[in-house]
Amino acid sequence: MLLFFMNSVTHLKMEHEEIFRNLLEFEKIIDSIDYINLSYVFHKLITLLLAHRKNEKSFFVEINNKRDEDNDLNIKRENVLINPKIIGGHIIVINQAILSKDAEKIKLALDNDGRMLASKIKDYIFRDEKALDRLLFLHIVTR
Image 1 (cartoon, one colour):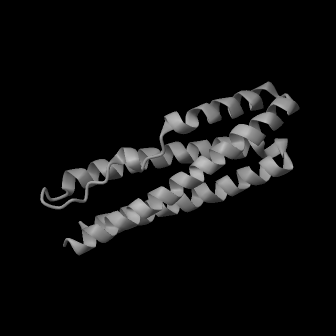
Image 2 (image 1 turned 180 degrees about the vertical axis):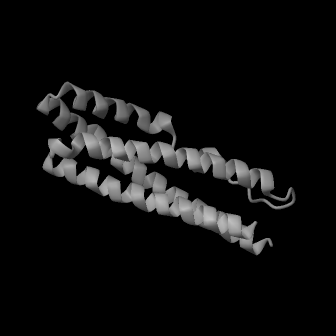
Image 3 (image 1 turned 120 degrees about the vertical axis):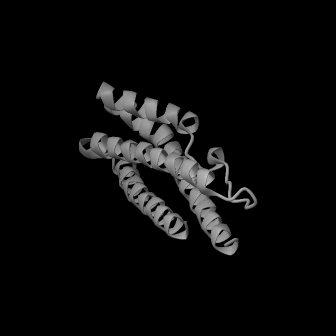
């Protein structure tokens, strides 16, 4: 079980690093208004987030199925998973602006929703890293 935890947490943390690298690329685009790469980088970032959310859901289902009833290792998924309701509106606004191909709409969407989306993703990664570290620590200590 410990090996499962360590491997899973390591994998999720590696996904965080990849998301963060892509987020930094997205922020560069916001600052430089690099419309040529915007669509690619934005869609890659969203694809990574969706895949990561799916992996985290599976991880939490697995640990909740495997955990001992007397150990309090159950971290609520809702407190850790990135919530589509929180970022979904920003994604829609940015995507619609990209599809419009209107430079002013894109600039406005990136200035407002792009920066808010980036901030929310950073907050999520920070919160998730802490939760995964806590979960791993608790699992090791209670064994």
